[in-house]
Image 1 (spheres, one colour):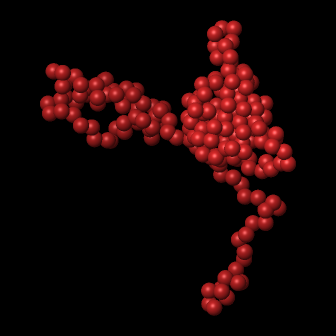
Image 2 (image 1 turned 45 degrees about the horizontal axis):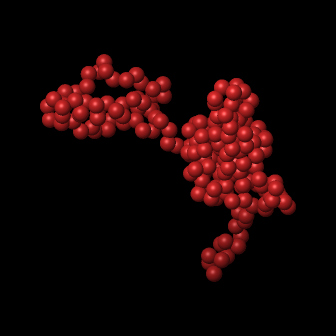
Image 3 (image 1 turned 30 degrees about the vertical axis):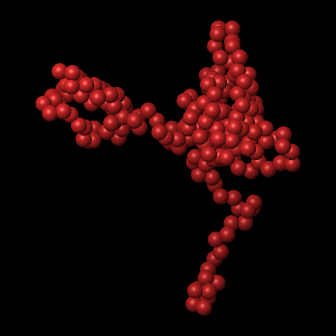
Length: 200
């Protein structure tokens, strides 16, 4: 009874949707979008097919052809959003940062055709929900790992065979511009020195 009485006089925390809407957080897995290249105005997708290959529900289909200069041209990029699991594996697999998942989640409709996304629709989603600083923040902060995450931290202990000499400071790679991150090329240094000592 004490718990019931103390709770009965508290202000309710229920949000009355759709009158009250909660702001989606950065990195929310909403409707998909293709990143528009600011230099060309077209999609950054090169048609490598990694997003379609990694998709567990097989909801992505990419059709390409050969261009006049023997480059790959993306003719059609189709995404059936009704089959999507929103696992974001397509975003993680894309090596060019060409696919994103926006913060937009209100897209109910009465026809299935509206859930079949093509290149123009996906580019419009980018312009509406992710253009500018929001898209840059999304690609830089919401999806890991990146290349810099595979470097060996400077403070990490590294095994070296007995009698191996320490690497000279002059041979160390240049530091990354971000002070909190380790050098990007230190991942191959221990293995290279170890192989030379074993061969000797």
